[in-house]
Amino acid sequence: MTVTGFVLISLIKIVVAMFVLLTSVAYLTWFERKLVGHIQNRWGPSRVGPFGLLQPLADGLKFIFKEDITPPYVHKTLYLLAPLIALVLALTPIAVIPFSPPVTIAGLQTPLQITDVNIGLLVILGLTSVGVYGVALAGWSSNSKYSLLGGLRASAQMISYEVALGLSLIGVLILSQSLSLQDIVYSQSGLWHGWLPNWNLFTGFQFVGFLVYLCAAFAETNRIPFDLPEAETELVAGYHTEYSSMKFAMFFMAEYANMFTVACLASILFLGGWNGPIFGFPEYSWQAGLLHVFWFGLRIFCFLFLYVWIRGTLPRFRYDQLMAFCWKVLLPLSIANILVTAFVVALRS
Amino acid sequence: MLHYILFFSFGALAVAGAVNLLIQKHPISSALSLIVVMGSLSVEYLLLGAEFVAAIQVIVYAGAVMVLFVFVIMLLNAGVEEHEGRGSRMAWTFGFPAMLGLGILLAWLLARRDPANVPVPVGAMYGSAKLIARQLFQPYLLPFEITSVLVLIAIMGAVVLARREE
Image 1 (cartoon, each protein chain N blue to C red):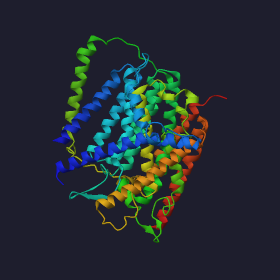
Image 2 (image 1 turned 30 degrees about the horizontal axis):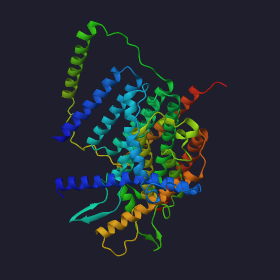
Image 3 (image 1 turned 60 degrees about the vertical axis):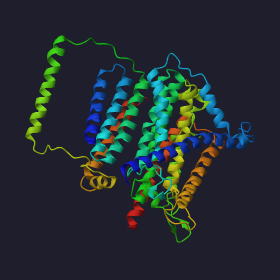
Image 4 (image 1 turned 90 degrees about the vertical axis):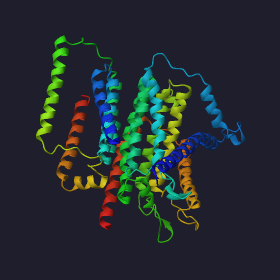
């Protein structure tokens, strides 16, 4: 493939991925409001368009036309920088997420992934690590008690649960021997004894790792039951109290984009990524590629459903319960998971 | 050609961040400059081919150590430093140029004497996770384990120092 061909293909992939991600983030808000509404025995958005499907559009217009207030007592540079950091670092992980194996389009064979870095998993971990700054700087620069406390609590929570998150992934890494996300998905292909899919959750026995990952990821994305830093009844609105209009919308979008990334990562690491039956179509055809994307999308949808379901069902943790849960329960569990997985792999080989 | 551009621009960015850290009066601005330095160093590691170290530099240094720095600055509400005066005229006219000259002379002498100082091509220090793990767990196992005990002692020391007297 020539250099210009490569650049052109990459640009097309970036545009498509961004479009898909931003639309998913917008309709994730619709999905959440609809589902939480039904759990609470009421209709969600149902007025704006059929089934309320134009609600995200209405919300977007609202945010654009709302008055954008910058309070005079804030630290201006950091106040403007914080939502940018949060949003940019939430949208970037889509660059390393594989949606399908190589697909032949117009004679060129390319995987449906913007780039397959051989440290893909570490790239995502690094991006979420640096994403803590968005929250911390927002809380501090807003120059208000509630924001500062909310920002500090949120960043302490995020860095604590990052440790458990990282450790829970090591079991998967021991099994798949590679940090590249495409390789991790490839290692989960095939069926075991003809019927059980070879996913890390089943034949890899990573259920403890999976549960630790889910809890840690819920806390990383500041979602219920770990959303104390931004709960309305607790600290007004935590670190985004002083933000209005588009800047608040950026924090909002960053949270949903983080949810999407977590769902993608959980599907790739524990549930086999894009693996699924391709019904006899040839390996690298576009029909097989579409089917792979469909299977991946199905898993992502299940995780997002789980996210919203838990939001509508569980009460939130108190802050000391939250931190104790991370350091006293999740951390020992994830270390035990690593030990057992390493033992079994070492004994087997 | 491109590797020269990348090396020098990110090196300049790292030096600019470090100098800015010293110049800035507010601790938060200094901390953010230090984050810029960490990021530039990570790119330099990447140019050497040490991909794992570059990622770990971002995750650990820029994403954990510096977060805790920023945390402490925010928690203690450290304010703007007071202006200490502009420094003596002697220091500005003789001190800084002399130090700069001495530094350049020293660097040139040392570079001339050591025959192992050859330019390193891009990607020469390739280190995947597997290679680094092999080094850490086989030849360098003892230093690795002793370092982890050292970090544990540091954590315990911090807990003891910050404990409330009961």
